[in-house]
Image (cartoon, rainbow, N blue to C red):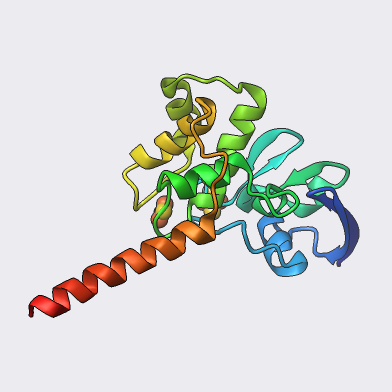
Length: 183
Ligand code: FES
Ligand code: FES
């Protein structure tokens, strides 16, 4: 039988009617519509579904939604403020901390929980903390570099994602044109 529950996600309240065995991951993605949190292994191993609950990183694929009442849930959607990316989001773009992106929200939420607790971790501390967040694409170095860029305050103050993206596209088009000319 469904239960009436209220979840506090990114400082917004959501009233939901859920089965008692509904997972937080399902509630976030399918009932609330916050699809930024990703599903990887579904068994608590990969970290793709990581969210922060009351300051602690949690696998939402192993957490019952009903158990989260009265707690503050943070997801990737809550990080950007007033149209400005969170420094970790910016760093992952600037330093190439992702490829396919499936693991990225979980990586960023795990890193956020660490930096909230310890803003100046060493590389080894970051590696240790993030060891529960698997990535099949990047080889991890770029993820570490992205997190350390925030730790060491090396993200661009005037970063504009769209402008850079457009420049990269124009450059790749130029390369394409010059290759086409030589053929
Ligand atoms: S989907 Fe939750 S840990 Fe992999
Ligand atoms: S970026 Fe593809 S799994 Fe990490």
